[in-house]
Figure 1 (cartoon, helix red, strand yellow):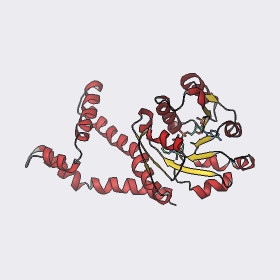
Figure 2 (cartoon, helix red, strand yellow; figure 1 turned 45 degrees about the vertical axis):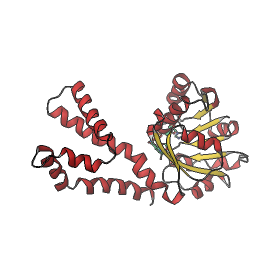
Figure 3 (cartoon, helix red, strand yellow; figure 1 turned 90 degrees about the horizontal axis):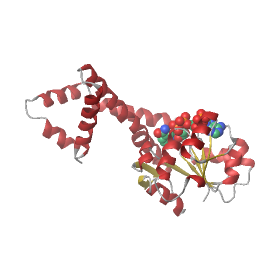
Figure 4 (cartoon, protein in one colour; figure 1 turned 135 degrees about the vertical axis):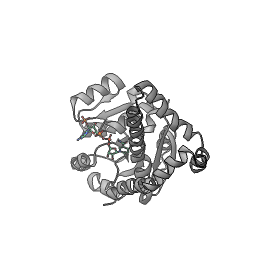
Length: 250
Ligand SMILES: NC(=O)c1ccc[n+]([C@@H]2O[C@H](COP(=O)([O-])OP(=O)(O)OC[C@H]3O[C@@H](n4cnc5c(N)ncnc54)[C@H](OP(=O)(O)O)[C@@H]3O)[C@@H](O)[C@H]2O)c1
C-alpha cells in the first residue's frame, strides 16, 4: 500500500511515528508533502519517508491519502479536483472541516473524517473516525491506540475533548511546573513530582472518589480543593472545552 500524507506538521509526524512502530507499513510505503525545505529534509533524513514535490504528485502516487494540512492550505488546493481520483480514499484529520466542504474542493470522492490526538506517536492515542468499510483504515487506527466509530455530527466533541484536550492537559501541567519552580524545586525534582502526581491520579478510574480520599477532613488537601472549587475550576475548564467546540462549529 502507498500511504500518502498531505502536510507533515505536528499531527502528521505523530501519525508516522506511531505507524512506524507497527508492521502495517514501512517508511518506504509512506509519501508526504510539506511546504518548506526544512520539513522535507526532516521527513527524508529522520523519518526516511518519501517526499513528493506537490500534493498532485502525492495523490497520483498513493491510494490512501491522509489530509494533515491546515484547513486554509487545503481550501487553496482546488486544482486537485481535476485529477483522476477514482479508487482513491481520502481521510481528513482537519478539525472543523466537514465532509461536504472537503468534497467542494476534491469533487465527489470517497472521504472519511478522523480525529486523532498526539498520543498516537506512542500508539497510545485516541482516534474517532467516521464510517468506513476499508479494513486497512480501521487497522491503522486500531494500531495507534484507542479508536472508535463516530457520526460526523459528533466529531468536533472529540476534537475539543481529546485532540485539544492534550493541549489543555499540557497547559495544566505547565502551571504545576511553574508552581514547583516558584516553591524552589530544581528542574529534576520538579519534573519527578509533577509527572508523579498526575501518574498516581491516573492509576484510579474514579477521579472524583480519589480526590475525596486524599482530602482528609479538615486537612491541607481539603483546603486546597475548596479553593479550586471557590475559583470555579470546573467552570473554567468546561468553558475551555466548549469554546474550542464552538470555534469549530462556527
Ligand atoms: N496538532 C494536533 O494535535 C491535531 C490534532 C487533530 C487534528 N489536527 C488537524 O491536523 C491539521 C494539521 O495540524 P498540525 O497541528 O499538524 O499543523 P502544523 O504543525 O502547522 O502542520 C501543517 C503542515 O502542513 C504543511 N503545509 C502547509 N501548506 C501546505 C501545502 N500547500 N502543501 C503541502 N504541505 C503544506 C506544513 O509544511 P511546513 O512544515 O513546511 O510548514 C506543515 O508540515 C489541521 O487541520 C488540524 O486541525 C491537528
